Image 1: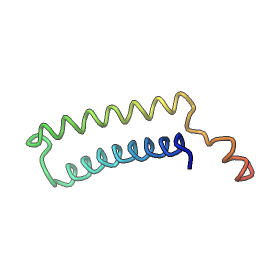
Image 2 (image 1 turned 120 degrees about the vertical axis):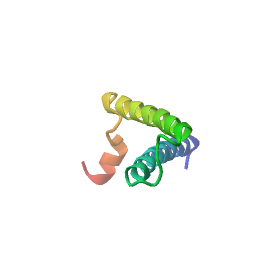
Image 3 (image 1 turned 180 degrees about the vertical axis):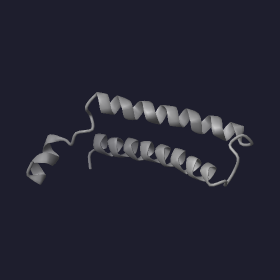
Image 4 (image 1 turned 30 degrees about the vertical axis):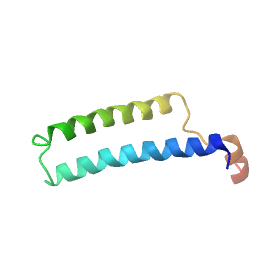
Length: 78
């Protein structure tokens, strides 16, 4: 695996982990695992992570980077 491909994979994994952390926070807060008002620092950190994650997702959506690479389409027969 080339170095740039490995870096791209690592970046994708990190964005997925950020999204998972935000969703887990929302899940546990919704089901009463903790009170977000009492965990103010954690709530602020997760709020900032959520904003960054959403900005990243919107940027990819509007930059049309969410399409598969041509080599993948050719391999799958598209």
